[in-house]
Structure formats: C-alpha cells, structure tokens
Image 1 (cartoon, rainbow, N blue to C red):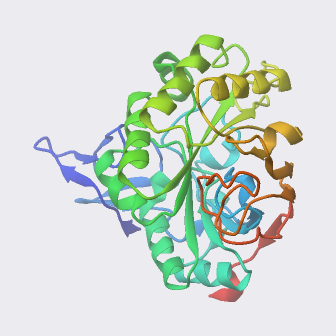
Image 2: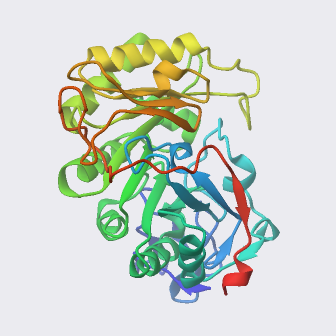
Amino acid sequence: MTPARYWRLLDSGKLVCELCPRRCELNDGQRGFCFVRARQGEQLVLTTYGRSSGFCVDPIEKKPLNHYHPGTSVLSFGTAGCNLACKFCQNWDISKSRHMERIADYASPEAIALAARQHGCHSVAYTYNDPVIFAEYAVDTASACRELGVESVAVTAGYMELEPAAWFFSHMDAANVDLKSFSETFYRKLTGGHLQPVLELLQYLACETQVWVELTTLLIPDCNDSEAELQALTQWVVTEMGSDVPIHFTAFHPDWQMRDLPRTPTETLLRARAIALANGMKFAYVGNVQDGHGGSTWCPGCGQLLIERYGYTLRQWALTPDGRCRVCAMPIPGRFAGAPGGWGARRLPVQIAPHL
C-alpha cells in the first residue's frame, strides 16, 4: 500500500483523487473507478505498486512506435485495472481485472531497470493496462531506468489531468497515446470517459514537452471509421499537434463486450491512411494487419522507401545515421541513432525475480 499523489480531502470528509478527470470521491476503504487507487484512512494509496501482470521483451514497433529507435527491444509490463471502461478493450483480462491474483510478479523499480539493461533493452514500456493509474510505480521505475541509461515509454489512453501529467511525462522519453475517436458520443458511450481531456493532454505533449509522441486509433466498423470523423481527427492533429506526428490506424477484432462486430477490413485502414496523408499528416500507418506498404516509412519529400517493415520485422533501411533520407537529405522526425536495432519480431517472456 504505497502512498499515492494528487488527492485532497474535501470539507464533506470525502477524499478526492485528482489524478484523472474522473475525480473519484472516496470514503475510507473505498477504491476509485480504476480499482487500484484506494482511500486508506486519511490518505490515498496505490494498491498495485511493485506488482505486475508479467514482463516481456518486445519489439518497439509493437507499442506501436515507428519513429523511436526502430528495431530495438523494449521490456514491457503492466499491472491491473483501468480508468476507462472501453467496451472494445483488447486487453480486458488485465485492464478489467478485479482479482489481485492476476498480478503474478513482484518487482522493484530497480530490479526492472536492471533486467532491462541486462537483456539489452533500449527502453521499458509501461503498457498492457494504462500506466496513468500506476503512475507512482511507473515514475519510480523510469527514474531507476534513467540511472542505468534505459529510456521509458508510456502506452496510454491519455486520460489524465494536466498537473499530474506534467510530473508523469517529465520522466518519459516517448509515448503512444490512444486517441480512440474524435467523437464525444463515442467516448461517453463506449469508453465511459470524455474526449476533451485527451485532446488537451495531446496538445500539451506536442507543444510543451520533449516527449516523442505517436498516436493510435483503433478503427471499429460503423463506430469511429466514418469519412467525416477521420477527416476531423486528422485535420485536428495537423492543426493542434503538427504534421510530423505519426498516426497508426489499427484493426479491431471482436472482444470483451463488442463480440458481435466484424473485424476491421484492411480497406478501411488504407482509406484512413489516405485521408491522413491528404490532410497533411506526413506519416500514417496501418496496424494489426500484414501490409508492407502501409506499415513502412516513406520520405514525405521525395517518396523514397526509408524503413521497410513487414509486421514487426525491419527490412530495407534508407536513413542516414543522423535520421535523414539518403536520397533527398530531408530530416525525418523521430528518435534515430545510427543503425537500426536487430531485435526483430521476437517476444521473450522474462522473469524478474533473478534480478532482485
């Protein structure tokens, strides 16, 4: 039961959590909507500090991040719970868990950092469920990682208040933010949240931090894949975040409480990509499908194939060591350092216990 940050006592005697826009008001012994932040006496505690649903070394492209040290490996982990209630959740067994036995592995921040370095990982990813709700654990781990030269990646829905976000993201090097839709109705009905706080966080990240940001939108048939919504979403990104921000349009598969819908056709993803590029976004990708063209990076200046991808595997590489197109010398936004990594598409489960 580790003390949590960002809360205050109300005159009513209740304690309000100020980490995310839900602002749950708690009596003693109550848990917030996320289930892992709880009131204990006169303080708020994080009940999952040091406890994880498992560790795995992944390719960084799986997060997905295509402009952040391509080809490198990342040590991924999460805890349990979530501060959204997405009916289409693709990791529902973790994010919706109410059972602490689902949290199988214990690891200190220092042990995670050491394991990442010993496995040759460039970074650690806080993922599977949303790191917003285990922010204290993620930040302590990120601090331990920095001491060992390991970077940190947040994979998040971005449902967080701006004051704690400034603290949280000051410890992150990169983030993939899940912009689930550009519709308030979609957010309210299918996630139990609201769109505007996510947009405000995205503007903050793009304009006021040095965090490398990429976006993901899971396209769900007849829910958030209309021409009008994709036009509005991509135009907003260009106007409010800039044309250099990459976006990943990924395929939905029936899960959790939306098993009656079909999988997203590849044609829908390619249409979304075309809309993004037509609206001025320089880098748009398709994911959860095998499409070498839509998954690869192309120079927005001369059209050269810069990074050829097939799934999570890199093939052709046409970037200079300082991240420029070898043909026209256009600088490509991102975090590139010399040659690409060689991790490939491997997935390696890791036990942290030996590193304690």
